[in-house]
Structure formats: structure tokens, C-alpha cells
Length: 145
Image 1 (cartoon, helix red, strand yellow):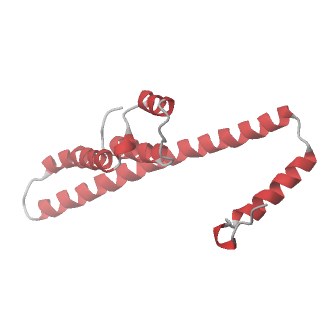
Image 2 (cartoon, rainbow, N blue to C red):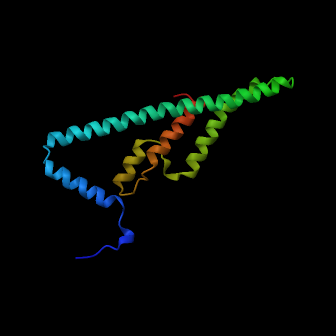
Image 3 (cartoon, one colour):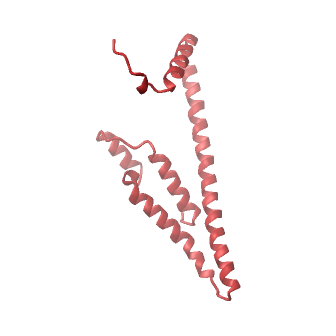
């Protein structure tokens, strides 16, 4: 029997072991487990969609507010600056381009993810979140869907 030093034990281990013990005592049927997992996965997917829509709205309102403020300042000085509205999609493209450059594992589509997993490569756990933020920046700044 090997003893794990206390410094390497996660604080979640006692909680998970107690939860596992209680769930094993319940002896749920396979149908109940599938139903519980489907509710949890469906709820998480629903919250992901809501977060995605809020991020799109956040980037849309914030980028247009910054440009509108800049245009107002230029109009006060007698300069027409409506051409600055073109900076909104340009800035979104620059941000998404920098994200693709910084996170090399970003990947263009699901085919690259499937190929990576079939080749035995590890897929970064934050990949989906980064893709969601990049898509919301792109859509929020005016890129077409």
C-alpha cells in the first residue's frame, strides 16, 4: 500500500469520495443515471448558449459605444468621423487574428479536432471556451455569420 503525501492530495478528494459513497448506496438504475446526465449536460449546454449570446451583445455594445464616443468627440471639433465605423469590424478581426496566433491549438473546425484525437494528440481543455470567445468577438464586431 502506498501512502500519498498530504501536499499532493486535492481538497476535492474527500468530497468526491463521500459523494461517490452516497451515490453507490442509492444504487441508481442505468436509466436514472442516463436521465441525470442528460439533465446536467443539457443544462450546461443551455447556459453555454446564454453566455454566448451575452458575450456577443457585450462586444457589440462596447465596441460601438467606443466608436460612437470617438465620433462625437470629432464632431465637436468640426471633423466628420463617420468613416471610423469601419474600425469596429477591423478591430474585431485583429483581436480574433491575435487569438488564433497566440493559441496555436485553436483549429478551424471540428475535423481538425477529430483528426487530433484520432492521432492520439491531447486537445486543450480550454479550446472550446477560446473558440466561443473568438466567435462572439467576431460576431459582436460585425462579421457575417
